Length: 385
Image (cartoon, rainbow, N blue to C red; front, top):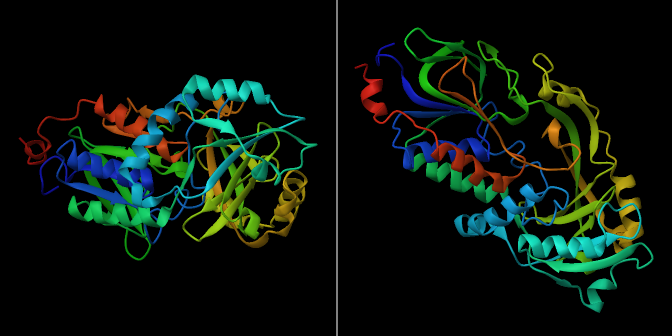
């Protein structure tokens, strides 16, 4: 290796929102100079960062996981302040509590919101008229927003450029090895070109669903992960719902949110959005499973059930569906919590695996990174003292 012990200070695997934000943090906050971001797709923020409901959480969604709800409340104003150009605020957001099959009552939900400090007030009569009163116990006006992934991608490109982060697109990392001189070696496979190797001091595995598909000395994560193939339907909302986002809590119900990147609404359903699931294991490639999946839409079932609660939804026009692999920590299947996964791998000193369940978790990741004692002078180290 011509640059001494390693060619790069850090390599980030995965060019989603988390990978890009970590790369920028390492340069701007921790002073690393030689940082490379590697992404298998043709552009940044095009997979899980885009194919989701685009919700900026403010805690309401997690009445059964106080920790997740509280962290969302703390992170929400930070996210809005840091990415105002990407956050859509100009719509009405309603949370409705179903009379039957809900795991939380209206009184419990209202108390929970007050406990975490989330704004909540009863919806007025005009907004209540949108719902079927026989199936809905109560409706609340809340403060929750949506984000535009295309604008986050523009931010990432500009910041990465200013930070002199090298971006490698159309490139897969196939394996990680422990090098001979406290370095880490990555095996790369560009889409068009011969296999390569890169050496570095730090690796951040931000590949989301592909996290455990790396070979070599990579040990896989200790935390068990469940993978799901999910469908989010993109809809043209009818006029009465055009400026409204709706979430019905807390059970086998639905959510319809503005999707700013396309000027549409996303429709998801607890029962119909997950198409299939499996325990994440090395050798079961989630992206291959998604590529081979038939992707037959369940939008008719989503709309039929959601229309019972909000009849106007029956007039929404289906446009398309976003299919993606969603990664969930198995320990949180029961309470629907969404903590981050942040693991250091003792077998590979300097290698980290990072996974977030929602976009505002980025602050929890950065808080973890703040506590890490990186080399005080990575440039001198890179020159092989």
